[in-house]
Image (cartoon, rainbow, N blue to C red; front, top):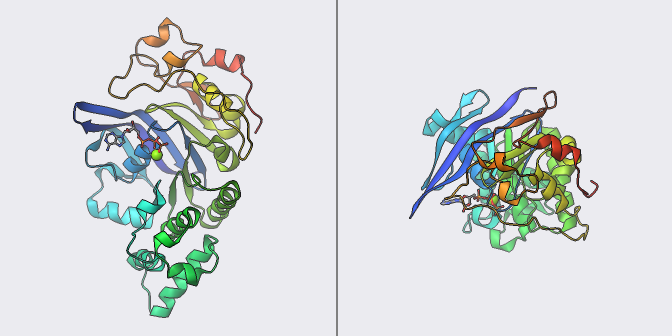
Length: 334
Ligand code: ATP
Ligand code: MG
């Protein structure tokens, strides 16, 4: 396997009125070619920030403070503006979290897709351009491509907008597809179809996929590996089947206990306490205040990632990971 994307020890900060927010701390993540990697965590944990840091679309008050991002062997953080533009348009497609705000409201869907296609490929005739647009709309399973192409974003449903955005992303034939909450707001049936589509596309394009979602059900469905982010720190990572059946971090354990299966109407057991504020990060483990395994030791010094299973690249940022593994809690079946 070939590493497509490698994020190493990344720190991201935002400048705000009363100081700095340290939104990502020592975050590492890798995506191999042809692999679907899930990135999960509660709202505000930094998932979108990580995606935006990768494509260098962080808000103007944000910056990468430390660490590295390598894509296909190239250091993205030191790439020129021009190289970055070309990488973003040709090799990395970022489907942002909010489809309606990522589409241009004053251009038809067809015109937006065509613009992307023309940035990357020579189109010989108007008819060929139209055909390419219809092809890519068909690929994302939008019915009646000709009709959809002529519509403006507000004339589409949320699910259709999401597909349109994916079509724009795919029209550059990317090596890496970053999908930020692609199924939020979709009904269960549409969600399932969207996931099937992503699987098909992965097979067809042999692209790597970074799938961002707070929905662990979605990850269990299509991801190979998973990364669990909490308040800006990666707490656990590993193959989906390992992490979901043998979570080695109390946060992952609690998160799994709060996850109803896709479409199931199970009662959710909330995790007591709340996520810490990012402008006042406690010393020691970031989850200690909400953790039933926490000891004095957890509240001092930095806690490093520990290897749970070397061969399978399963890691947990927890001093008590062995206790956690030995004391499984009732986790809903996959
Ligand atoms: P969600 O699931 O709700 O999409 P997320 O995991 O994607 O959440 P982010 O949007 O990455 O979370 O935000 C992570 C943290 O960074 C939050 O505390 C957020 O308030 C903060 N943040 C994001 N952008 C900025 C900004 N431009 N300025 C200041 N703080 C920011
Ligand atoms: Mg987000």
